[in-house]
Image (cartoon, rainbow, N blue to C red):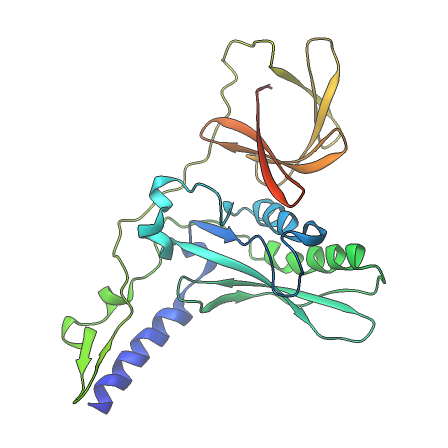
Amino acid sequence: MKSRLLFLFLLVSSYVFSQSVNDYAAVLVPLNYDFLKSDNQYRLNTLTKFNLQKAGFVAYYTNEMIPEELNVNNRCNLLNVDVLKESAFLVTKLYVVLKDCYGKVVYKSEVGKSKEKEFDVAYVEALNKAFEYVYALHYKYNGKTASVIQNAVPASLAAVPTSSTSVTAPAVVATAAATVAVNVPNNNAEPDATTLFAQPIKNGFQLIDSTPKVIMKVYKTTNPSVYQAIKGGVQGVMTLKDNQWFFEYYQNDTLMSEKINVKF
């Protein structure tokens, strides 16, 4: 009996440590971290999502609507990101952790450090430095779904009975490989009164209306479907979803998503 349980443990361990970030289709971003007092304090959760998208990942907040192919039945196709704080004297230290659907660590960055005294500056600097290690992964989804333990464990070992209780392997729904499509903006749509026109500027575009008046500025990232965006002093990201651009930002700790009609 013990040898069978050990075999099961070794199979699960092999699954955990064989995973690569490239095996996962997207990342879920929480609205808060344990070391923060409120949702998106210092805009660190917004910054996390922005940096993940800049690193090539598809990222969603945990309260966002997720595409059907990545719905709750397929959550093992997704990673969960966390940012952890390391205790230090006169130095702020943060690192990024990516975990699978079982809470197992798939990737942990090196520590990002800042000696700034103000938290709003120190946390941002430390997090950005930690993400430099994430960028170095050169993430690219390989089209696979995460390995499923139930497929790896023989049926005879999926539930190993004992004299009083049963030990059951974690239940995981086996799914077909999901493919994340790269969204392409529709530039052929007829412009209307709400359409903004993109004019090239250094590292991005300024979006103007028909007046013409500059409404917002967007700056390129390594992901062509994601721009860092500024509108009326509000910072966020402009992201392409289902062939439609959205300006996402936080207002009074509430995530806002504003549809933007853009003609490039």
